[in-house]
Image (tube, rainbow, N blue to C red; front, side, top):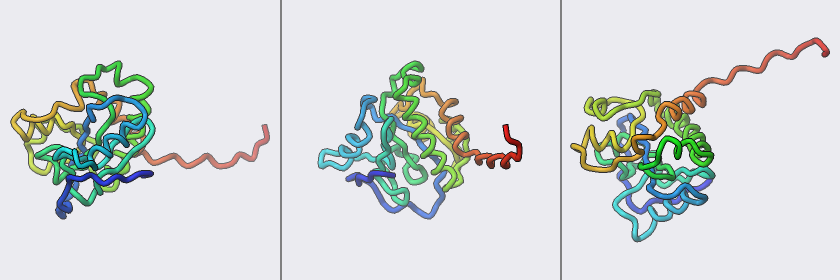
Length: 191
């Protein structure tokens, strides 16, 4: 991580329980340069809402706002067991909006981070729905909307939106989780 901006509202220190969830959010802020930094600074400000996330991600950078050992106030019902990733953009984005050059770079950046988190916390590469979240201790990737519907009776946020490219995102993460093939042995032949 190149930048850490401490969120004003977070905590306590995460319990010894495992990280079960990687929760995907949208910042409800434009896809443009410095969005991750601007939202992180907003989380850190005196005007900050009673909210935070572990990471803010845009196409150019990732800003950490809460240490992974501390609870972020991101999605009630999944805060203590989740690592929360905020993405530039809006829940209302269409499939084509999620396919533009900005979103593509951002999702690649996010997938590399998510793969690292999943590897360190042994979070399986499984997409969890609201129904899945009703099972205690379930592990995998989910959206804030799924936490809203699965654990909060439908009261809460709807991000990352119905057109978030889950299949493509999970495939990107899978690519980062794959071990790299060793290079081929040197050839004795001269072309």
